[in-house]
Length: 555
Image (cartoon, rainbow, N blue to C red):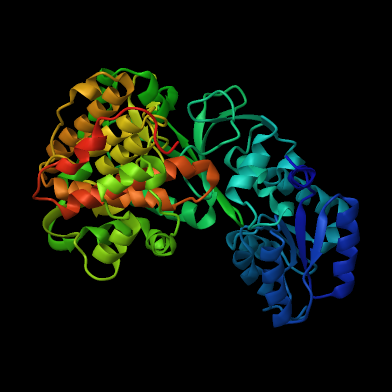
């Protein structure tokens, strides 16, 4: 962590002072400095004071507010403008002060959302005690909450807030942990599937969100998701509408607590059983028999209620269905994407022989601008997870699958979750990073069939254990897709695979992900070629020159 980040994470709580008397504001300011708070003064008179309070609470990410009940006219018994302002200053916690209010006003303040009420005549000691009590609930430094490893807060701040939020407000990370674990003295944080926090928190591109395993004191761990506020609000709504009470069996997380701060929010999920790892690690370490059983349990049992309620739809654009789940940001990324060079993976000679289209240009011409070849006569929609990659799937000690991260959960293409997990396996999970022929074989095999069903393995695949496991898993996913959805149109499946692959390829342009990105673009190019030549022999005869060659290319 940088010195600036360390300083921010241990900062004094920021408290907004809202009072229509300037002398009172200054008096509070001096007291609060002495009590080790950062006082911020709302300035102005009448309506301008109310507007300045709202602006400064947000701009300074205030954790606390000290506010007079009468902000317009101290002598008007009907003036309760401070009470009406409480909800507009959330998520800051408001403590009301008043010289003339009684018990009824204190009760009304509580009903409006105030966390406390102090009479001005009670004196500084009573005010300090009330402030300290509230600060210990919501400000991690005041509670002296111990979070380890110590470097985790800085890495989380960098991932969640980055350069968009000034470093002095990075204390929202530790405050979020405190609000999720209000009784904790000590928290130990782990990335799912590991025993420590690596420098790369996210193995899958996931802008502005992280999923962690957190141990509170001596208790069993729970799952915590931290993300930007709009993402957490969306997930809370999705959990209520599509997950809670709507899946089958015991392998469904329970939402224990949520919190919303200015820039980030958090969810705490508990579960039955011991979570050992995420699916990414499970896939790498376990035999195919266990992988198949785990996938069966999720698709054929846990998520089955949603497939039973599937809706048949006619003459619909698959592209539009995926846009409804992902929003249209991914389309803008495709439109603006320029780093499209699949030949860097295949090698210039191989790329020339393949004669495959550039996938970004193909997508623009065939889907986005001129026409939409993803319109299908018949398909089905159902509630999909919407982001089913290996890091959102948790596997417990009994090899049962649990899923987390419901931000994109909603009605979508019924095949989407099967396709998304397959895309993750092809593009990321198998150990073929330095093996061009192996990756090419997977891409070609994935495009071969006209029906959704299990795939036959070639001799070259049988000879390579990691590649064999990947292909067997993909084959099983397709068998499950047909069994659970009743669809058999492989062209729909490949269109979804193309969308998922381009979503992944365009989400990050960092050098750290360059090789993964180029591999995804290569798969997308092969998918485009297959869709263009759907009724022809596969693989194309002119590919024979490079399909079976060995050695590394474009590395």
